[in-house]
Image (cartoon, rainbow, N blue to C red; front, side):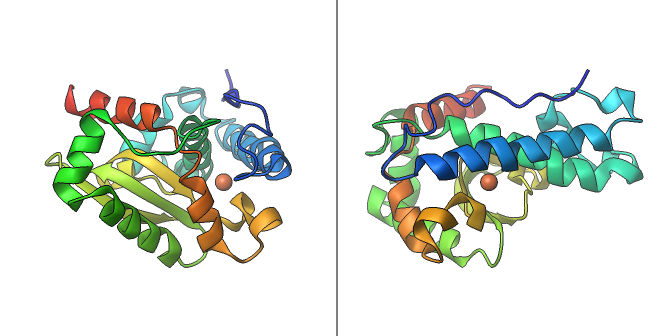
Length: 205
Ligand SMILES: [Fe+2]
């Protein structure tokens, strides 16, 4: 049993003009597929770690055997993060969250604009390659954090709700070095229904 590339839930051009079709195609078929391929190579000799729930493995990296820990962190994280990222965007997305997540954002950040400003600041400040995340901490409080490389917040005890890939491979073809332009565009394609679902799954557990 091997890890499989999860289906992209829309066409490559679905998020145009905010995310261009060529970037989507390369991001999915080369970068995401590459993480899946490398993950399978890494666990070739470790049958009990083949086709496992990556969320469970990433939750406790210390429990993994030494020879495959870094590979699962990087490639398993890369696979898990990208599958989550695709689901959190959609055609005609954007706007503001309604429902329980929207209420929680207003409660913690006062209003949506403050939340957006803080998220943008964190996403812009990632030095090199990484991600910005809206998470719940262990006490159920919303917070915004960044991670480097393909690290996922679940490895630090946080529960991700929404994530933004700020690796250059996510935007360089269209936006070149202008990461802030890419971040601003991303708000137009966020799938808030999925973010709400992620939030509810955490608070209704
Ligand atoms: Fe990526």
